Structures are given as C-alpha cells and as structure tokens.
Length: 220
Image (cartoon, rainbow, N blue to C red):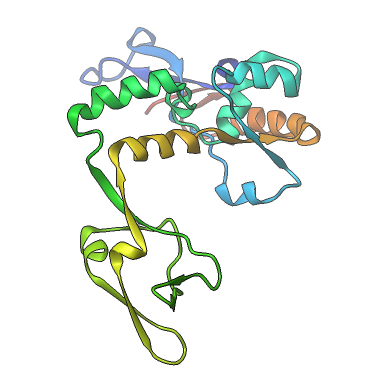
C-alpha cells in the first residue's frame, strides 16, 4: 500500500539528446519526496503512545495488532522517522554480540567516550553535595581526568572529574544504542485514518511546468 501511494516521475535517460522523445524517459517511483514527521509532536500523548519492542517482534506484527493489517507497518516507519527499518529495530542479544565483535574485535572493551553520572538530590561525594551536572552527558577525557569546579551558591567546590563521570566502552555504547531502538511511538487509532488520508493527499502533484497528472510528473 505504501508504494502504491508514492507518486511516479518520468526522468530522461539520454540528457545529451534534445529534444527528448517519449522513449528517452523512464517512469519510476519518486522516493525523493520523503515524508517526515516533526519530532516535537511526539511529546503530545494525545496522538501517540509509547511502545517497547521486544526481541523478535516485527513492525508488521505491531501494525496488525494495532491497525488490523500487517501492511500498515509503513505507518510505523513514517511516524517514527525511520530511514531504514532493517537497521531501525533493536537486534537480539546474540546478533548484537556478533555485530559488536565484527565491528570492534579486540577493542570492544576499549573506551568509546566518557559520560557524566546521575546524582540524586542531596547526594554527596567526600562530604560535598554535587550539583550543576546533568547525568548522561557525553564528555571527553580531559573532563574525566581534570578537577571539576562549580558554585554551590556559597563558595566554589571542586571534585575530580572521574568521580562524577565514567568511561563507556564500545560494547556498552552499542548496547545503549540498541536499547534506544526499543522505544517507538504508535499513532493512536483515532488519528490513524486521518494520517493515511493526509499521506495520500500530500503525495499528489500540484500543477506546474512538469505536471502530467496528480500521480505523474516529468523532469525538465
């Protein structure tokens, strides 16, 4: 259904010969017309619900469960701005381990980057309350190895960077990135038909110098 909604384009195959005859053109799907959702809209629970993908679950299975047809998996792809669904879903543990091994080899436990730790309100290090650092921020080796100073409202405090940040290995990084892919947004059913109809409408051409029909245009 997705491909049938994508409009066509006639492009010339012999640009050095002008004027072109009809045999010089090839008709193909116009995949340059990418449909992208504004990411800000995902913050509205009115439209979407969060869903955690488990190992082995495919998009067509989720589409069938929520929309009644497996071929509506393209709605999940578009509403989550997936570039390539084959690489947009989480890998199972065995496959992920193989990917990490192939990618990094013996360096899979080497440091990929450093990351700030998350502290609870009032938590202390060596008797000093740590404030002013957001957890999960990517920092460099210089931050990790150097003293970190901050103003606590009364005086400057100093703690070692290694006490408020940690090294993240290549293995840990790939695990984290894979886990991020588990959470997707599912368009709620009462907005589903409206989205599908809008997608079809937006994939119709408007009249221009290259216009042939709502579903076909020619390159100039």
